[in-house]
Length: 174
Image (tube, rainbow, N blue to C red; front, top):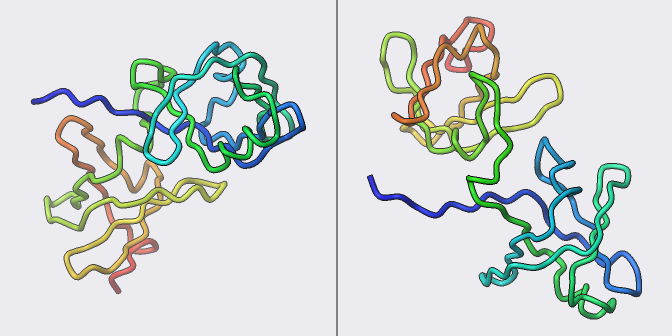
C-alpha cells in the first residue's frame, strides 16, 4: 500500500482581526487548544501550501486570534482570508479506543450486520447530541445513520468498512 502524505484541515482563516495583520481563525477540530503551543502551521491558500511561523495565538469565544510571521498589515491578512490551516497525520492528537477522526470515516463502505452493502459514507454531520453519518446508497439516495453504539457495531479503518444495525426507529428505507 502506497503511503500518501495526507494533510488534515484544522482551521480556516475567516478574516483580518486588526490593523497589525492578526487573523481570526475558525478552528475545525475538537482540540482547538492544539494551536496554543504550536510554533508553525501549514497554510493552504489558492492550492499553494506554505509553512508559516506563528508569533502569537489566543482563544477567543470559539475562535482563535493568530499572528503569523510576515503578516504585518491588514492588507496582508486580507490575502489569507479563506486559507486553510493544516497539519500532518503525525501531528494529530491521539484518540481513545473506538474513536476516529472524520477523515478516517469518509469513503467507508457501510454494510448491515448481515453483510449487505448499504452505501458509502460521504459526510459526518455534527448535531450536538450525536454525530450523524450521511451514507449515499447505490441509487444515489442519502441515508442518515446516527452515530450511536446501538447502531454502529464495528468500524474497521484498515478495511475502510463500517457495520451498522439498522434499528426500526432509524431505518429510513421504510
